[in-house]
Length: 328
Image 1 (spheres, rainbow, N blue to C red):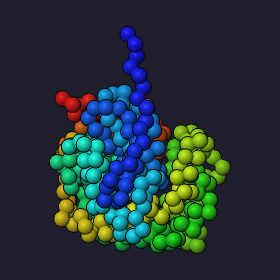
Image 2: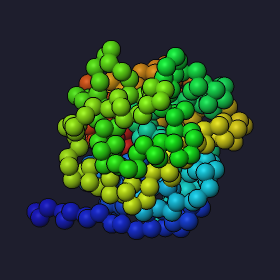
Image 3: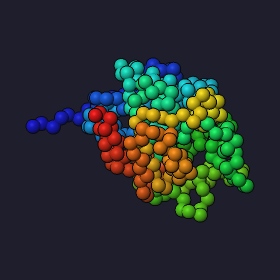
Image 4: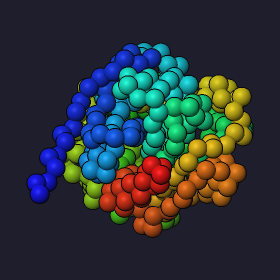
C-alpha cells in the first residue's frame, strides 16, 4: 500500500474587516483555526500544521492583523478585541466553512477565547495555550498594570502603552531584540530565580537590558529567527504593539460579558515555568466555573512560554487527542 502524499502548505489571503488576512493552510477535514501571539506570526504553528493535517483536519494558521502579510490598519483603536474576533469570523466564512475549532497561544489565546465567547455559533470549541481564560471584568487593566511594577521598575505592558516608545527600542535591531525576548521566556535560557525579571523595565532603561545575551533557546534556529525578524523588519512592530494599547478599550467593549463563562468544549495547556501560567493560577483554579466545558487542563513541567514551539510533540499529542473527542 502506497503512503498518502504529503499535502504542502498553501498560502493565501482572504477578505476580512482588517482588509486582507494572510493565512497558511494544510490538510482537509474539520477546520481548526490557529491564532498566534506576540511577537510571532503564522510561523509559530509550523510544527502543528502538518500534525493536524496528518490527523485529518483542515489546519489554518493566520497572521493576525498588524502582523506578517496581513493588513495593518493605521489607527491604534483598529486593534481592539472586537475587531480581531470579527477577523476570525470572516476567515471561517471566507473558507466556506460554518464553524471551526479555534486554538490560540499568548495573545492568540485571548483572541480565541473572545471569539468563542462572542460567537459560540461559529466557534464550537476553544483551545488555549499559555494564557488561561479569565472572564471579562475586574478593575481597569492599565490601573492594575501601573501598580504591578513597584519602586524603580515598570511592568512591560505599561511600557508598551505609549506609541513609539517600545518601537524606539525594538526597531533599530529587530533580530537581536526578538532573539533576546524569545530566550527570556524560554525554559533553559530564561533568567534564574532571583535575577532581574525580564517582564519589567528599570526606570530609564530598556526591556532588553534584562534579556539573556547572545543565546538562542533550543527550539529556535537561526533560520527560524530570520523568518520572524524578516517579517517585523518589513512591517514594523507597531501593529503588534497596538494590541496592548487597546486593553482598556477591550475592558469597556466587553463589559456586557463580565463574568461570562465559555461553555463550549475547551482545552488548556500551559508551561510550568511560564509567568503567564503561574501569575494566573487563580484563573486556572476557577475553570470549573469559567470553563464548564473543559476537557482537560495540562501544565507541562520544565516548559516556558513558547509552548507549541518548545514542546511541539507533546502539544500535538494533546491537541489531536482532544480534537478526536470532538468528532464523536
